[in-house]
Image (cartoon, rainbow, N blue to C red; front, side, top):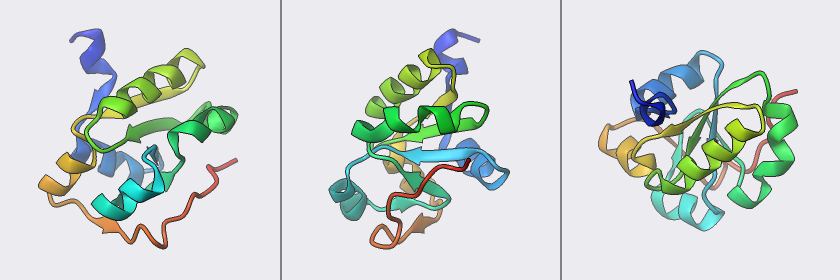
Length: 116
C-alpha cells in the first residue's frame, strides 16, 4: 500500500468511522455546504479555522472532507504534520452524494466545536 493510499478513505469508510466515534470534518465554506449539502455526522470547521482546532483533534481519528477531495487532502496532510491522525475522504461530498450517503441540513449544521 502506498503512503498516499494509506492517508485516504472512501466516503463509506468515513461515514462508518464517524458513526463509531471518529471525527468527520467538513472544511468547505458555508456557501458550498448550502449549495452541495453537508455530510451527515460531519462537523463544519472551515479550512481557514482548522489550525485553531488542532489541539482538540489530537488523539482522535479524523476524516476530512471537502467538495472533491483536493482541499481536504491538503488539510489532512497539514493535520498529520501537526500530530493528528487524519485521513482525506476521497471524492469529497460529490462522491458522498453519488454513494447515496445521508446529508444533514446545512442550514442547521453550523460550525460545531470539536470534542474535548
